[in-house]
Amino acid sequence: MTYSTISLWDVTEWTDAHEALARDRFVPMIMSVGADRVQMVRTGDKSFCVITEYADAQKAEKAQQRIAEIRAQAAEELPMTMASVYAGSVFAHS
Image (cartoon, rainbow, N blue to C red; front, top):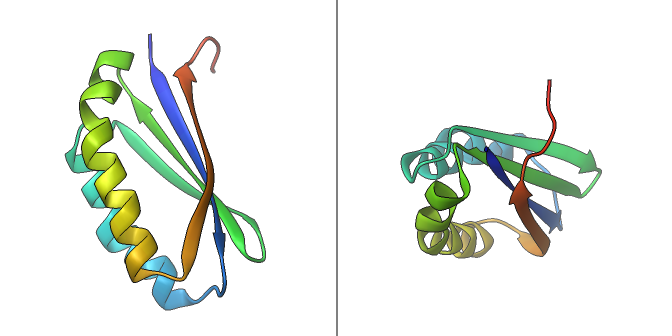
């Protein structure tokens, strides 16, 4: 069964350069630790979420230490803070 994590973030400013850094640097970093898919979704003027999909919970668990490091690095390099994080098995999709 697939497994997903969703992290919610708040930013103090939004720029094209920040989007490019997220897309070109942080998405590949997340993918490199075992994610099957990563989506960064702008949810407001100064907020977004990261939806990360894994093949299963075991693969997600193996990645979490490195994911925590990536999140900390992103928060240091970009004007943002993580508001919350959720995770769980996907029980329905199309």
